[in-house]
Image (cartoon, rainbow, N blue to C red; front, side):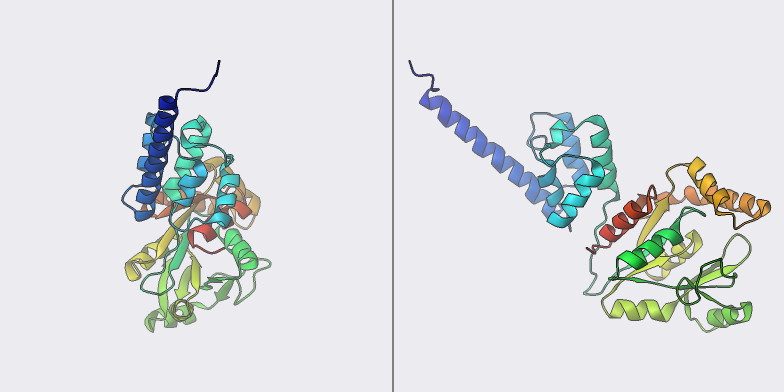
Amino acid sequence: MSSSPPEVDRVAASRAAVAARRARAAVKAALRAGTRSPRSVLAAAWSDPASAEASLRVTEFLLSLPAVGERKLERILERLAISPRKRLGGLGGHQRERLAAFVDSWRPGRRHGGRARLTVLAGPTAVGKGTVAAYIREHYPKVHLSVSATTRPPRPGEIDGVHYYFVSDAEFDRLIAEGELLEWARVHNASRYGTPRRPVLQALERGQQVLLEIDLQGARQVRTAMPEARLVFLAPPSWDELVRRLVGRGTETDEQREARLRTAKVELAARDEFDAVVVNDTIESAAAQIVELMDID
């Protein structure tokens, strides 16, 4: 006797497979067109195991997001610790959490009116903004890293014109008076920091993606002056880790550290004002995520 299924069953199975492929294709097309949000697709996949969304491979889902290509896909899957063979409905609890967090933070770099876009990196004191920015400067030469002016003295190893422009109070006053700063602020009730306007605008006009590493006050000023700017919040893995980094830095007195920690608590509460949040767990990972948000390979 033949064990082959009846012809009618094979036809039905074939039609079902075609319908499933079409349903998945429709989901991917809606994602690419922006008529469905990534979050809605995940919600459908995880609420109905029999849905087209649940049968969608993670690779298909990610490649349907704006600005995700094969090269970025590999890095994203590695960071999320998800196998490329996995389907959305077959992800474990922790994998779902990581994928949802990635989707919430994904803001691909876009050109606006044919011009490059300014990305602002801000976050609480001692979170490592300068260290991450320095890593990007060294490893991602396509990024134009804006150099801020400051009235504070240089720390060991800092170079004038590379890490900051170290200026006097009188020179800083002149920059403010002549409108040469895109933003400026007094930080921790002590030194002043500001961004020279002209180099940023010139780099954008050349088509370069510009990264500006500043404090929270400055980020708010940039948002007002340049609403098209992308704001990225660099967060610590935990409060205890932030305290450990600040104490371990050893560049402040006990009184200065206490003042910075008080400020940090206020700054951490501002993360919802930003377009994306990147956790500085490791310098390499944080830098890679920021560059991905800027759509730079």
